[in-house]
Length: 358
Image (cartoon, rainbow, N blue to C red; front, side, top):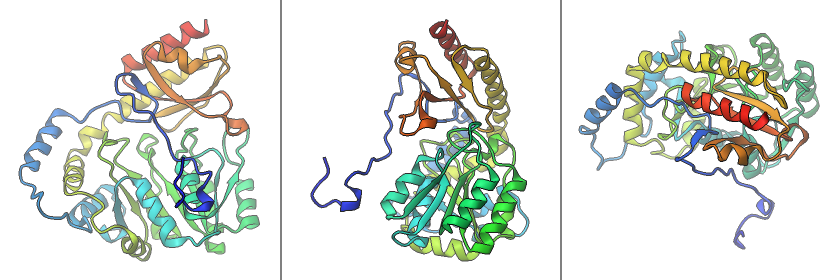
């Protein structure tokens, strides 16, 4: 029950909610199934002994931003084009703080990252959701029409999309960016899962001064527990975000770990190939099951429908947890998302599904 001090417009607010279940086979949160390699952990331990925990961290995280710009590898971009956050969703919150007024319209797909809706409500924005088609993709014509009809202050997209795994083609995004530039609409593209599709649109920030790209260390770099993300944009937008962010939002430890994993990025990111191969294998297995309709994915998870009653409870009896969506809309009825884990965990999931649906 809320206190009497809560804003009236948040009286019906539903926060983001997850259940912590470390003892189960966790295939529910899109986490990387692989821990950091031992040699990386040893290097982190060594670096930790040199940290001065009594002093505040660099509020600009200059050195880590410099290394991220090198990792991105886009000519003309440097540390001035990057801002860091305690997770990319913190930066998304700063975007709402810096650029939105109360009642400003925000446009995004109706089946996308849940924080879009949550942050819109907190900011007092007018959130407008575009319907997906039956293949769970967004028609370019519908999006262009929505931009013209609603003229939003902010357009939010995920590529690949969470929770469906669909990635909008680059040529369609270029059409959207051109339209948004004409209408002076700020565009945020969340690339949390971009490493799993093998391409990024970060280079476009050189050409579009209304574009922000969000990236994270949580997924491909196996650092979900650390909470470290960043945004890429032009220097003016980055300065705006730097101005509203909390001064020491990224800890001295997080900055150090970020620097270390980028040194070992070739080793860490080499595991992506395994995850992608497993994703395609699990996808093919799910295609064979009765009562299941699974969708292709460019991320590290699969979205599917299943008509089996109490599927979640039955999977939990096997010690397996996936994501079940509350049926707040038609497209979420009997909807589930499974994270791609290690091969043995994926096998246990598939075997459980085969037994449950037999």
